[in-house]
Image (tube, rainbow, N blue to C red; front, side):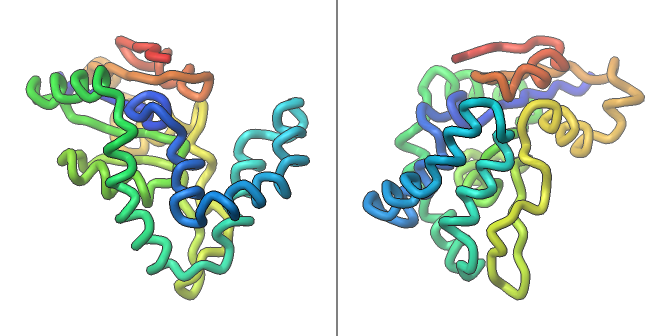
Length: 198
């Protein structure tokens, strides 16, 4: 039996949203506030259910990061791991450590961008991270995502991509999953044990 422990990131491992935290960290409070004021019509349409979560998220990401040098972006992402450490939820970090001690394979699956989760995960000796992926052309961020927003059923899809025989040999796996929001419902339902930790 292969035991997998799958964790959402924002609101589960962390107390705050890392997407917003990274924007504030990389651009400063003034530009963060101004940018979200400009983006407010799209945020309102999302709240009203007219625009999808992923579409609005990509627009926001593009406004802040389109045209940024990829090396600079990754440098910021690497430095952000120290901020993430201050955002950790102690209760979930204890759960994570328990799974490590049991020899389970740890996977983080998040709607946030992989680039700033991976440096933090590496500190925790977690190698498997699946998140929203960004598009880079000629060493520059296009402001678009190169993958689907890793939310809802996409979290299950990404888990199956990491373990391709899950579909055909599901009984060989025992999955424990942790999440805190609507975006985790499908993952929690797919797991043998789904823990809502909101």
